[in-house]
Image 1 (spheres, rainbow, N blue to C red):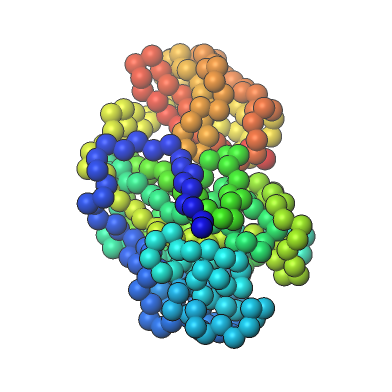
Image 2: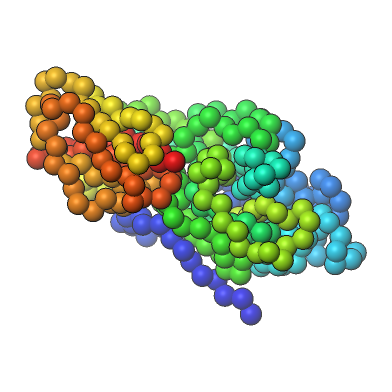
Length: 345
């Protein structure tokens, strides 16, 4: 019997979330307009309305136990049953169904090709509120590659449909941690983080898009299975139980994110072995502590550098860090801080 094993991101929880409202409609993919059926298009994600795709030529798939009796042969492609289907064998994390999508395709034949899933939220996001974002993934059993760097992007409007090999030019607000590869084919892996919109921003985001927003070169593609057959030389994930829940209170210290009054630049971006920054405001005569944080805010360079923000460029050695997305944080003696995002490639 399979067990459920949770992998998580660091998250600050200050309330009991079980009674909170999930802003993601049909987050467990249980409500279907029709049962998935055999054949191309038989399990398209829009069966789990209001979920949809942003890839014009491809579509994410819906799987459900109600398709079980429709299996004709064990090697038939386009089988959408649970737990056994043409992509692998997996029970739902909860309930009767889940969705599947390509995080990367064959990196040599179809570079940067992938799928994304998208839904409107039931309510827009508000500034000054911290949200918990959570979902579960499992690498489909028959596929050769696993990836890291799965992300979530929140927007005012739905993302336009794009060709499958063209990545959306957006920066996801939620990004799984650098160095974590989602390679488990037996258990569900939890991706969880918190989202905060500073009061200085407008908010109002009411659309959510999930997928791999980074190019293949930054996706931490890892070979995991040489026994997969033709057509499985890519990375395909099941996803279940997506939630966005507002926390009742803002954790202590979050106000520092609102006081980003320093005008400073980070370059080059993307960076390789070295990243540099300069405080551009000549009146900002401050001494700052500098840290590099990973995609979920954990320190990646553990020996803070003290720099004078008025003394021109300051460089930071990144040679010991893996590729991925990071934050450069400046913090002064009064505890005020400013943050800039950058990518190491």
